[in-house]
Amino acid sequence: MTRITGIGPYKSADYGFVDRNGQRGIAVRAHEKSYGPPFLNTGIFVSGSNSEGLKLGIAGRLTFLDTLTPDSELRSDFSLGIENRAAGEYYQRLKGSRFFASPAAFISQRSQDFFDHGDSAQHAYKVRETGASFDLGYATGRFSELRIGYRVSKLHTYVTSGTPSLPPLSGMVGATRMQFTHDGMNHIVPTRGVYFSFEGQWVNRWPGARKAFPMMESRIAYARQLTKSYSVLETMSGGTTVNTGLGFPPFTLGGPTRLASLARYQLIGNHYYYNGLYLMRPMFGQRMPFLSSFKAMIGYELGNAFTSGDPPRPFQDGVAGVIRETPIGVVFFGASVGERGEKKLFSHHWAILPLTCARAPHVRD
Image 1 (tube, rainbow, N blue to C red):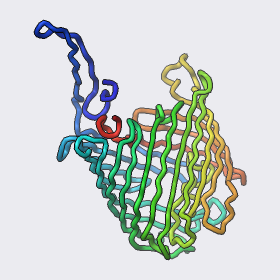
Image 2 (image 1 turned 60 degrees about the vertical axis):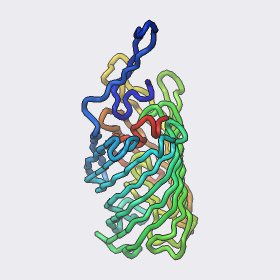
Image 3 (image 1 turned 90 degrees about the vertical axis):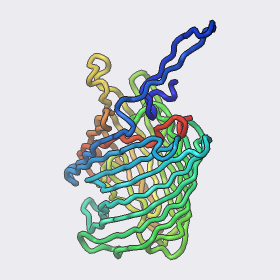
Image 4 (image 1 turned 30 degrees about the vertical axis):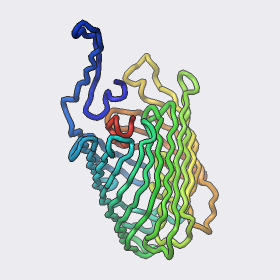
């Protein structure tokens, strides 16, 4: 009952003793949610710093259950503002097993600034991508899954300001991919648990690339409660294309929780690595319950995004602030200082949209 409560169409479940035909048994009752399906998750994105100004956005997800057949789910996502994106994914469990099929389609557009060894952007692009994918997968556990599939899209970049070092690019993107994800964190701002993901791709088409190449990216996070008041969170990630002939690099760093003293996407390259270590403590304890969910946080970050031939030496910074998990998202106010004197005051709010499948029989078995 704990597996289905709060997941999919059920808000609660209970049981009681019953007598029937002279025998005693247990009656289990599952109570469906009155407000769906379909379910609508919404959120807002607010991000600002003393160098980038204020950026706003909204996002939402509409989820339908058993749309065409039983044991299926249809998701429709949208976001406007910081990134403009619309996407849909259909998830179908295969013959009552843990295997599933998942076709998806999307369209997105975002701004990409390029920096030249400083805090001021030298030129800017718009990056537009439209595509689709098809995955076959297996739910390996209640909080993990394995996917294998193919993704194809049309990528188009065009200059919006400055004189670029890279010419605008247009072309098809095609990649065979394998992805494994495990999410064992207890909260969005976790105090215990492990998160791990790995994605490997064989990219046979990429604008500006002279030949096919592999691309890999992995992320791991570990949270632990040190004492009753203190918890620690460490996040590590890295990626590589194992190729020097790409026209438009795929990896970026910069912004809150991704080298906070730098501007968003300030570092870009064909390879990257990142490590962040954060110590958190509730600010007010049980004496002020409303404010007890605010946590003071201090952290140390290092990482770099670079192309082959550039120095891979890590950039380092320190960050301190206040973070809180709310019903509509995570709020983070803070400041950061980089090793070369970079300074940022920032506020950041991002929406909470569930990333794992909402149905107990599919991903959370």
